[in-house]
Image 1: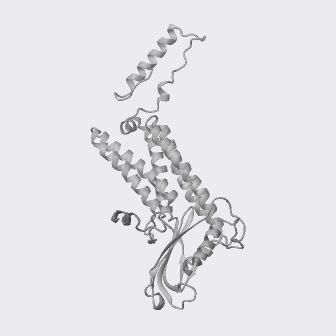
Image 2: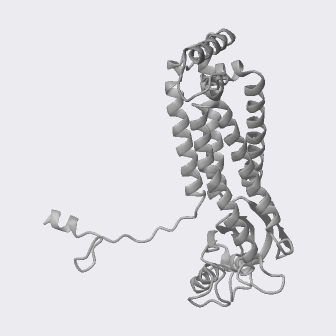
Amino acid sequence: MASSMLYQAFRVDGGPTQYPPNPTPVTADVLEVGLVFAVAILAFSFLVILPGVRGMQRLFFAVMVFFSIFVLATIMVSNFGMEWETAEVHTKVQYKAFIAEEMDGTVGVKIGLRAVNITLKGSGEGELKNEEINYNERFHYGQDGQGRIGFGPYASLINREFRAAQYRGLPYPILWVAEYFTLDGEDIRWHRSYRLAGYYTLTMLWTAFPLWILTNILFCMFIRYGAYFMMLTGGVMLLGNLIFHFLRFGPVLAVPMGTATLVFHYGWCFWLNLAVGSVTLVLGAAILFLDLRFPDVTSTFFSVGSDPDEYYTVKTSGTKGPGMTTGSLQVISEELTEMGEQKSDNTIIKP
């Protein structure tokens, strides 16, 4: 009897167990935190095997691996991050309809490449004294086009999400900011502006991702080609910043909120991608210069021989005809001997 009562707990008419909802405010971006943890686990894995590398190669290996992971993390975090543009203000605003009291709180907006994130946190007086005010809402641009004007089934995704938020009864400050992204006329085209800028910036970041993978592969084979692709990766990342900056057309977004105004500025995702892209471009050019002038230095650092193309280049002998004669073989043998005398001990000669 007791076991039967135990298994019937929280059940309604013999249905599955149901628990009451437990809404909690979002305190962090789960996707961003997941990416950071994934990168940390990857870096820790390489840190574990680091003692197995001997001599100065241990330091070289650590620098190469951790820089590679850092650039990869920057590309992914900038791709999915919500801090390309940010704004925050502390003010008094009306909280809900039919409530005269104003709330004293903080309104924050984060603009990413795929969506806009709006937060509201504060405290109220009077009727709002015992109410917890802690909201975090995300409205997505939608990459399937601008959609029709209005809030119907063929409207843009952000318009449909805005209408759903109205039905849910979200606070006025959140709806007030989100409404700026639902209009598409005259100079009020911020949704179209951010959607296009985010779409093409995403294209550049997704292009930089395979380029960086190829860069790491080529550095294990041909240093010079790896430097080329490293410069190409940095250039594509910087191109993403330029696209986000110049494709943002129209007036600067400024949202009046109570007695203050939300003024937007570039966030840490924009500056991080800009800084890492610049470092990658400059570092790739430096490696290319060193490989051309001091190939032994780059060969020692990467534990890879210089560009092997020069090993297969043999001067054309004076012998005519398609066949190999004794004279032509002698010329090739002399060339390989000279190349072997010029190379250092750690260079592999491939006849």
